[in-house]
Length: 318
Image 1 (spheres, rainbow, N blue to C red):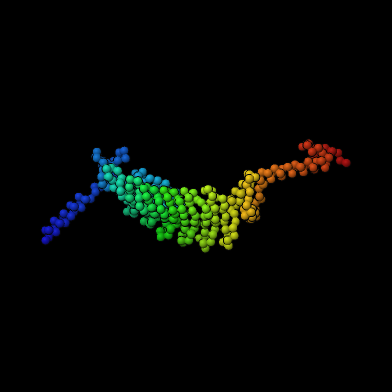
Image 2 (cartoon, rainbow, N blue to C red):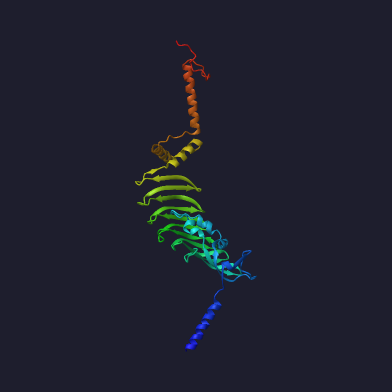
């Protein structure tokens, strides 16, 4: 029985060896016209290539880096910093010299998996989970044919169990709801996107008590209203928004304040110690009134109103 067991074990080892893929370290590989070869070979490599610099893999991943860079993390560090600059070493499956199927990327000099994915002819597919250098989950991207499609989730580096942002994405663009969170889990901001453009009403809330802190209304991708709120609910304009309205008033007679804007602007002017600017027609009317008063004053003093150097100082004292 011992002999049978020995031969059975040996057969299993040979069977597994026959089924396992050849392994090639990147330092022994050559890249020619986008095809991977074992150094000195004329036949494209088939098997697993280890320690591939992530930069060599990125051309197969579409706009992944751009998508990640554009994500708002709602925390101190941006996405590139949270992901260690994406300076990874990857183990990739290769077929006929081309990257195919599964890959795993790790942080340098570490066994911590930064992320792994599944490649198809169309690009990445399935849920792709990124981790920071400490192994904590940072971002989850639902991939389909090389594009992000679905609910993106980003987690706080300080608390990997707490979402910092989640958003609906279609073909790499925001399309639907976006919610940002404070570290304690309370909603920080919430709004809607349409084709990567903010739309409708967006609201921000305070970390301390969850009360409304600001509200922005978007139309055609532009903010047409931006109000801030005191903890007691009183609305007010920021100083920047006050100056924006002043510039609009001063630049065109066609700009007309709504009654609500007029009241808010008056409150802001009192709050920040500013004086409202005049519209072009108001400035012209003011100049005309000042000129009429100047002429009337000269006539009253017996001076030629059209003489700009005549101020009465040349007349003898009576």
